[in-house]
Amino acid sequence: DQQVKQNSPSLSVQEGRISILNCDYTNSMFDYFLWYKKYPAEGPTFLISISSIKDKNEDGRFTVFLNKSAKHLSLHIVPSQPGDSAVYFCAASLYTGGFKTIFGAGTRLFVKA
Amino acid sequence: ETGVTQTPRHLVMGMTNKKSLKCEQHLGHNAMYWYKQSAKKPLELMFVYSLEERVENNSVPSRFSPECPNSSHLFLHLHTLQPEDSALYLCASSQEGQGGHEQFFGPGTRLTVL
Image 1 (cartoon, rainbow over the protein chains, first blue to last red):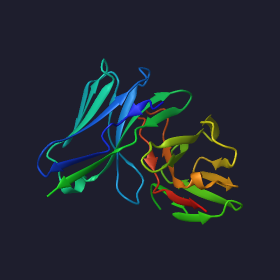
Image 2 (image 1 turned 30 degrees about the vertical axis):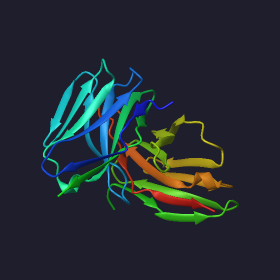
Image 3 (image 1 turned 180 degrees about the vertical axis):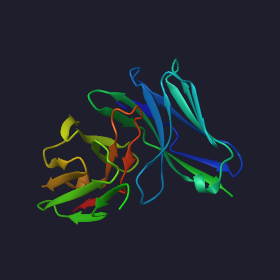
């Protein structure tokens, strides 16, 4: 049973427009949520995170929104740039004697010039 | 070297071989992780070491054996693997106790089992 789900395997957006990537989770005990970005032949790199006590975190062009009642989070990228084309992983974390992080399957974003 | 490094980057092995994957982190972190990424599947956490002690083992088959000799190095010893073990194996590190949960990943080892 997947605790973290990214239901869209891919997303195509025009350069300059907004990209919205979605993620759903099932475990209400998660206390931290993260987004990672992965280019081919590289490991995932941390992008932005949000604590469960917040509902929004912004960092430049990237904003993460958390809706705890719906167990849903989203990543907004605006404006989208061709260099944003990558696979984006949603992750949820809780501390159980060590940080346990559960990842989604990823969404591949294509930003067209 | 900076960040998290992994060697080898690519590995092809037969089912009867024994090989090891190596990970080294140059970030001064106190926790290290092994993940498996199969095609179109989520990253699967395999092992977690915190302060060089194994704290998590997600029911990984015994043909995968981790070793963490110190806080900077992590190994994954492989023996009698199956073709379905072919995947990208990612190592990561993090600093526990500083609030953030973000992990820093290496580039991965692409493993093919014939």
